[in-house]
Length: 150
Figure (cartoon, helix red, strand yellow):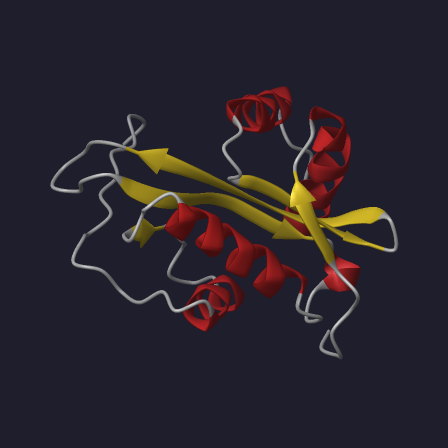
């Protein structure tokens, strides 16, 4: 769904937002999420640092974005990571995700982080387009996976 920009308020995520975030994630993925998902979101909220944000539209949580700072790993110095992002289906295409992403990037830059990373499945066209709209490009890294069942 595409349309005009909504009136969006970005704020820091609170533990009380977790049920709304779970609902958004379930609506986006069209499946029930594990209890572990809610636990992980709570941990990011408690970590704080201005890297877990929600977007409110009409006083309700319409989207979220979670970032993290990692200080080590395979040739990457201190860097920012976009861990998760989700927008309520009815609010997609109205600038909610873009505002969330823009605010998270500002928060990373305010902390002196200039290298920001994320991962996305190659076949998630909408997600790839979203990250491209925020200025992300292909990196020199290759994502590797080992599935113990294979």
